[in-house]
Amino acid sequence: MTAGSSRNTARDGVRADARRNRERLLAAAREVFAEHGLDAPMATVARRAGVGVATLYRHFPTRDALVRGAFARQMETCGRALRDALAADDPWTGLTHLVETVCALQREERGFPAAFLDAFPQAGAQHARSREQAERDLTVLVRRAQASGALRPDFHPSDLVVALVAHCGLVAALPDDPKASRRLVAYLLRSFRATPATDPLPPPTTLTLRGFPATPESGSRASRRA
Image (cartoon, rainbow, N blue to C red; front, top):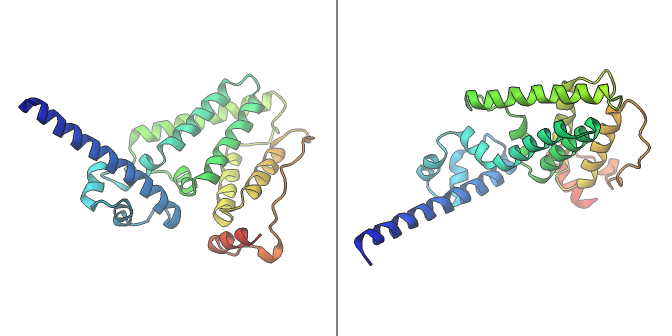
């Protein structure tokens, strides 16, 4: 083996270690954010990943960078769902798919709801432009769905934000009850419609008043008992 090939092998090894550390950090961040919220200490993420804090900051200089990295796939899925909704022949079908996709992500990735609603104030101009474009696209989708007669005429784009916040609260209180999530989404979509829906609702949850969650933590316990 020549000196050059040895150096190349060494560099490849360093890059591979860096990639593994990055993936461990992202996986740890998703776990920690789900358990403790987006304000969890960065050191906690580093410990969970089994790396030093300095390694974490080499990969992710700021908390916002770590949050965006941890949920990049989910954010891209939301962006793709919005683009698909705009391209759909039927705007109501597109809007329905968008709402169901975002709510499924909120349900399946427990740290994602906060990341989705967070404004990332330090994320810079590029993120701000992306968010503004998404808001414009959503407004266009809403107007198209209203023009088709499927979406109620008094629906406002901010109503979708309210619905997503409500769903965030549900999945935080009942993280182990996907039936409750799907049922709420179905009710929300029915409330958006200009005409009564005739398709059946998803199966109901087994939650009772006895198991009504007072806090997200007790909600998790109640869902497991139900």
